Amino acid sequence: MTGKIVFNKKLSDKYYYMKIESPEFVKNAKPGQFFMLKTQSFDYLVDPLLRRPFGVCDIEEDCFTILYTLVGKGTYLLSNLQTSTEISFSNPLGNGFSIVKNKNVALVGGGVGIAPLLYLSKALKDNNNSITLYYGGKSIGDIHLLEYFENTCDYIKISTEDGSLGEKALITDIITNFDYDIVYTCGPKPMMKNVVSVFQDKVENIEVSLDERMACGLGACLGCIIYVKEGDNIVQKRCCVEGPVFDGNKVVWEL
Image 1 (cartoon, rainbow, N blue to C red):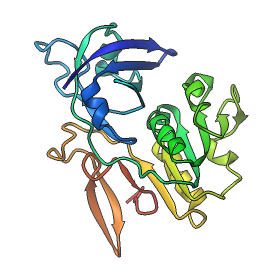
Image 2 (image 1 turned 120 degrees about the horizontal axis):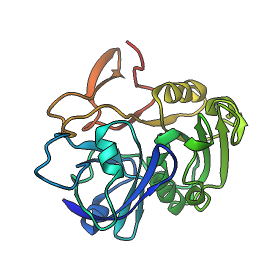
Image 3 (image 1 turned 45 degrees about the vertical axis):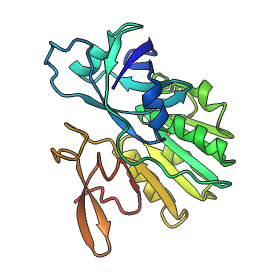
Image 4 (image 1 turned 180 degrees about the vertical axis):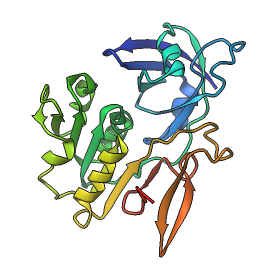
């Protein structure tokens, strides 16, 4: 599948926001799904060989967006792609978030993990849910896309570790209301582990979106194995096929 880059904006020293036009992709994408993206435009380049996984950040008419950070060669090449460049990517992959109706929900995002929560917030808003967003980062440079969330969320609470925006605290430390029907979270593993700990026994459903290293994205390479509880057993799951969204109460964070 291919699409054309509409824009590739630099938001800060390490964050970029890219919009890609692809009606075919948009038609099938659901909140919480991901895709494998070729991070350069020319076929004859084989380094990096593998595509990279990215979450669907938002959908607007015939276009979708991604929020990404510079972490290596692949994302560096991606950051240099210009408007109108044709780019290659997979179909939408994996299982996304469940969409509830008429509920009181909380979204908890950290850093670039905020990305899949934007499209999710749109879907939840369309289904008459009351939405509170908890958004945390190390500093103000980690907080982006607030103007979009203001259109979908009823309440937005922000924290940064250095106090440069919002409260000076970890995002899980500023959660004082636990009256939610369901919690969705995406971000660093320690943050999501804390989110599950904070809401455990208070909220019945906690959905976590895990971000594991993936080579194929199709369940063949087994490079993204995680562990979950099934009854009295601990079993392996492929994050790309059975996830990336899992029941947070069943994820085994440490073995």
